[in-house]
Image (cartoon, rainbow, N blue to C red; front, side, top):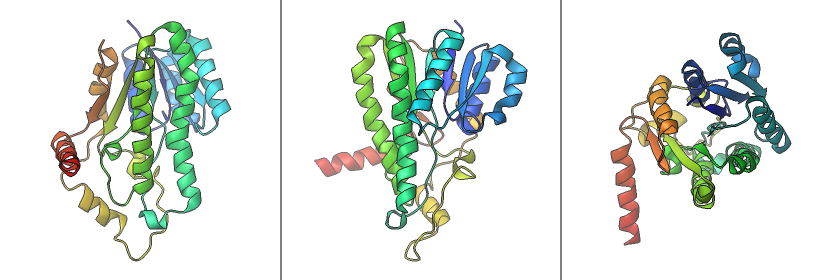
Length: 260
């Protein structure tokens, strides 16, 4: 059955790749972006199956309006990919107040506004799948990105709680946890405040943190996402990337050893 998707942060990176993949297989996509003009080629190529919507997820009223626009256009939404977000690379001691507030408003509160706006419609339908894009930084504490870690740990707790609250309504919930990929997340989308001289450079911290993680290509995230939305019993969590399982398991084992 053809599905209707709502994808936030769809102008580039994972959001763009998943939107194109869904459209190419005949699904419909509501794609939100702060710069929807970057999606003009998809409008030309896919016509009425594609609806770009201007949105900054920090604006709660605008999120609600975007969700309503999507439902009016297609009559239902089967899959919600809560993807909008960005990275902040800076030692915790040096994080500016405004940058801390901005990333929380986008990565945490923006995700919350989308979920709150979509749930009444999904409950009325009696089905739906909310996919929250988290990160391996929601499972591990990676140096040099403390506030990004904080937002993803917050999202993990929020969305796991959500899964327990909405399963009786027929709504599935999944946290997708990518490792490093060659997207704008580590490029133009990232925020890099001035760091104190006491700390290594961002590149040095990355080398210390990610020695065993091979950056993946965004296109490799297509098949796992399509398989995820097509399964009748989606998992609560899905790691996305190469060489992640062993590292996450080892980190969990160290945590368990500390508890013991």
